[in-house]
Length: 282
Image 1 (cartoon, rainbow, N blue to C red):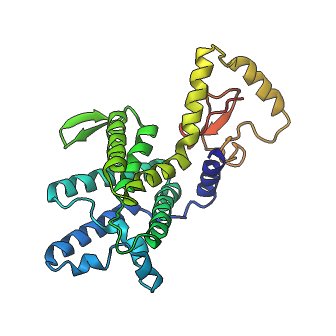
Image 2: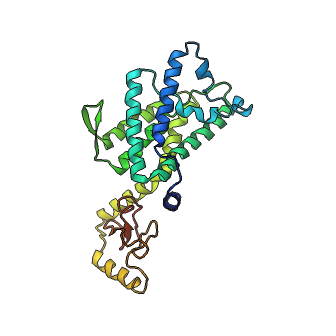
Image 3: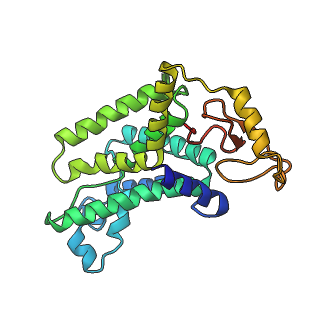
């Protein structure tokens, strides 16, 4: 998991122009258009051409592979509007924090996992699968809560709630979906969680290790580690080097570098990765 996320971080840094800028905006626009058209189409013919069907995909209707992303996750206008607002808020915030490249990889990876699962499941389930991007979009709440657990948002636009509590409520919805849903659609929450863990499993492992280190009082001797790091880099052509992206103060003299006190040892990170990296444990 850590290797995957580090590879994504490096790819995102070396390919800053990769991805779809304002991706969630396009997803929401697509949802709104489908919602409006479906409301005007009393026969239901329009939605018929969007539903996931593996057999029809094999016959050439390949747009069904991706159309589920734009199928509205709620039929009620009020809930539909509220959900789109939160999807856009969470998605755009993650994109600003991660960068367009990494957020695009995160979302499209979830789309791909859902697509593969639905296609394989559809081969053994005749007819249409009632899938959409509901759980994929909700999985963004988990990502947001991991990065900004203490951030308060206005639930229903007037109730202040911390993101970590919303994430717990989100997890309850996932469990309910798994227990009460019909197979194979009821496993879609697991697919969304798997995509989330691809990017954050390392954080859970680090949190566990940090807790163990704290309980055993094996605190890092920061001063000793600092002197050791200075000796090791004495002959290097730079003073600071980011442990994630590899940028140095020689190549980027205007870039700010900091050291993480939660990592075991004395590890340097650029300003882009000081608050978002996998902590060193040894």
